[in-house]
Length: 347
Image: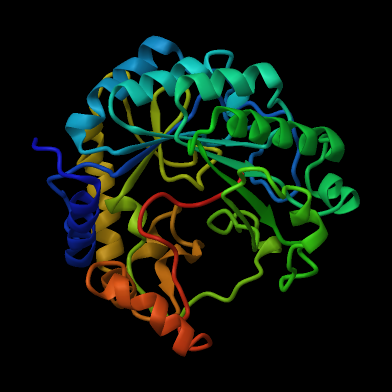
């Protein structure tokens, strides 16, 4: 298989999503590869319930997956799924191996274990992107959301990482601080005083968003109305989630492994990608029979406020260049949809 650039590979995924192709000729753009499903926190917005056996990914299995990723059309590796990736002692090596294969590396962490030593190791490994999940702009709210974490310690860990990055004079990794809004305050904005403490440090992005309902498993935390227009979930044409033991999970929101599509101990990425179960899901989503799929029946990802084709087309040139000006002129009318690719979530 000829590996397209990420831009053209994304366009091609968009095309097959539009067409609702049951067996797309190209593989996923990104892989969620789970170093471990163990976690050191008990966040009340998380759906992880302990029903899946806990473990850490074997490095031989990890290399087997990463080695075949480029030829499958993969461009990005997200080293997370259900657990805290820094609990895997070889995470820096995993990052380095991903980078050595010409793939873009991501780590999503809660920051509690981001010591100076681990920060140095991740920077040495050439990490491309880090997403730090930090829910709450004050000690009370943070420790209520992130049960088991210490507000001051994690802030210190983040600042240490940023300072080490600054001392290297490097643009990498891109560092994003992601915050979930309080359930009782869906219109919450981040306190400017909280943001100000990172002045002078190379923090690239900070934002707040509503908690995920984990495909309906945590319906009690739903804060957003579903859209009115149905269109199949993008993830079946763009992403794959792989558990620590090599099994392929339903999607990045299936933390407890309710749906298994295959096993990369015995199959290739493309064999699972266009395997019987994956094709069945695409076919039923195409036919609007999502209620027959336990994985998708209660998930909001199949519903859009506007027409999804218009959104994806707006991300392509020349419309992409025009879009910022449209937002300035019509700020209230221009509602956005989730980006095409990996489902965003926090750990």
